[in-house]
Image (tube, rainbow, N blue to C red; front, side, top):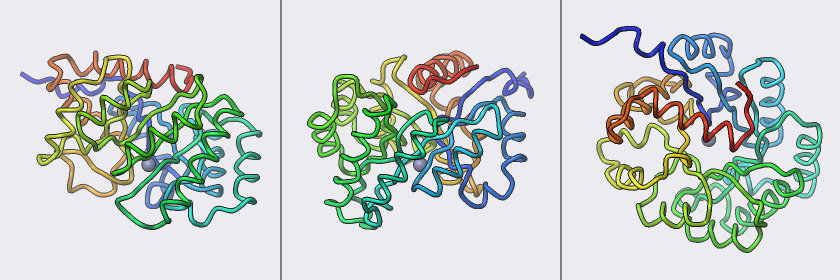
Length: 267
Ligand SMILES: [Zn+2]
């Protein structure tokens, strides 16, 4: 018989969500409480522009188990100017931030010109180096370019995660060989995500993170539930645990350890 309280035995970090975006931001306290009730007691909330990064850091200051990142998303890169980078540096300087991002490249959508995205990415690689922080990298249909930019502009100490990975097995090999972590979202549970599952199988135990990317990307079997919320990361965890042939608790423990190590999270 399955134990209805099984989820309460999981202790899992949502390593990438957007608590500052609507509709989650309207009811953050409830969202965190609901997540905690199913075993998701720690969240990393991700900044997508300077104002959002400031909002993320205030949430992190308000809630003990919420950490913030600060960055400019590739979709926002076209609006960035010198003032943006000075302000982002101010946010990083003030502290309370565990990573730079999300930054990266998105060639699927053209909200920002690719050249502006590359400039913004390079700027943020520099900021991550200056503040000795890991990078949270959004990368869609641009893995080769992202890896080339990282190897040209990143130092040996550069570290970070390719979040919401949706690429192929070969792309995962390239990312892992270059030393980066990979984070899987609910997309890996989608019926048509066979490539992502093949890639998931080769991620070493200590290089995998789990995330929701909430309010987006609800996993199966709650794919039709909107918005996605941090608590739903347990579904992705259980799905992958089955794929890997291990217990959800064991998978959660190793993904937590990877997130703790990368972002320097406390317990
Ligand atoms: Zn995101």
